[in-house]
Image (cartoon, rainbow, N blue to C red):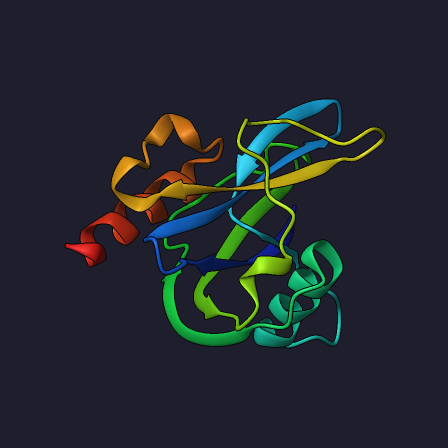
Length: 145
């Protein structure tokens, strides 16, 4: 068994929409919040900044911690891994550079991910694939009230 540490950013725009990431990996399609895996020798916030730079070419500011996994979650992709996820709120100045889609899984040719905005008030469990993301969506919605 290995630990797989994942770091995600909750980016909400001025229209109260949260950024979602539709991805295709390991023969599956799934929707999650932007972010990814912690690399050896990397801090949590540095990981998140790197992931947003790699995936979106976007410089972000990492703000407060929203959630840290506090229950056992087996990896959906590696049966011997336990997932530990860390979620931060993030901000960015130039959200207009993010290429967004309107339809889930509307990938460009040969692309493995696409991004889209979803109104926080309209966010539902079924909009996200993984159990921890669903829990965090509930936290986000609760914090918006």
